[in-house]
Length: 603
Image 1: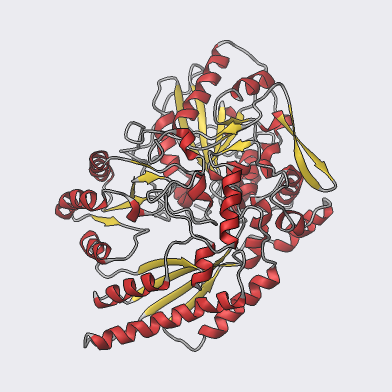
Image 2: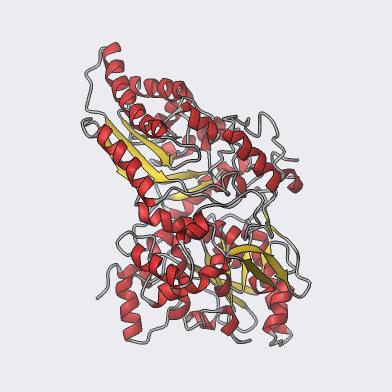
């Protein structure tokens, strides 16, 4: 009771699964390198917890990063980091599996291993130590953390996790104790990357390629689930002890996105688009609500409006939910008459805020990034919404996009001012008494990410980002109905290093952890000056990772195959500079390469 929110550390939640501690069982602990309230909002955790607890020979437990107050108490009292289900220290498990959803959690991985009694560096682990593996979108470039992981899963985990665990089961049953031989065998599983088998080469401060050991695969291809209807889904998810970040049940409509926004890594990593059937979704949604007691079901996808049977699905769910006083949460909708009507029917609280993501302030720049919407779309949608009684709008933009000019930056503020005027004009046109509108403009920083058409682009400097934020702030400060919020510039600058980093960053991250850095994703803990100092001490600079790449340069993630060809990304980059829009995947196949999976929209 001497730490904040002790419910994070006690377990005992409804629907948790506890299996016996038995040598015949492969024991996995699923580690989320952030605080409990964030980790328990993660759908991947719930899915893989269900999958790995399915076979009788496999078990899965959970662990989360202790908040700094608990971290301090555990070290003072020699308490190892333990799983919530059986209170077992991490070093007693066969597999320690981390979910990496964002780069700024890297030092929390080291915190959890350290507290769990596991050697931080893979090369220091003995035959009896757990196998430490990573999954999640960040593994498409795991190189900045490669020295700390024995293996990484690429793509979706439902099938590969069990194949991986099965190999470890056979290894245990045979009584083998050769860790290197085990890792080499694991590398033969499609979708499993073993960093120790790939030795990076550098010349003149530039990455030049890999020396591949032990006849390992020259390229590791991501895994996908072809049939989402047939795969395991948690109909009785673990119910958190605390109020978590997204405190509701979840239903996943589909994976992938047809849109092809050129800055969006998820849109390329999760290709091709694969939908669940309406029948499966209705059955799952109703079962989840009955098994959990939640009164809200969140609909998950990269673009909800693109689900082909959305109207029929929501009608089927609402027919049941309205009788139970339950509601649907519907993010990522393109606003039109259908969407506004649906939002009114779906929510018990009418007229909640609307969210738009124009991303750029001018049509020219929206074409560059292939956003696929124009100002007329935005204004006509908002006019509909204002007439329907909505008065709260959130607008999301990016600063620092390729080819961006100050005219584009000013366009962000100008668009918000036009929307403010539109609200009052619309109220006058229908003879309604206007309320005070709430218009929020939020800007984040563009970070070039692997496997996007912009993976070669320069990132803006701290000074450039700050100048752009100041311009918008000055343009909006007299408009009291418009609130401007912005992301921290220094955090985004450092994230840009991680996103396109290589293995030379491993000692940097280790040194940062040794100096006490954890929870870097939280602004109050992130120390940019310390990190840049460590980078310099290691003979590296911010510019090494964020500036001066060409399309002919070898990339640290070139040995990873996500199904999207490099030549396609180059073509999309060229189209961006020519301000050409690529049609979405349902309108026309753009030949990205995802047809290699012969699944979903790419048969």
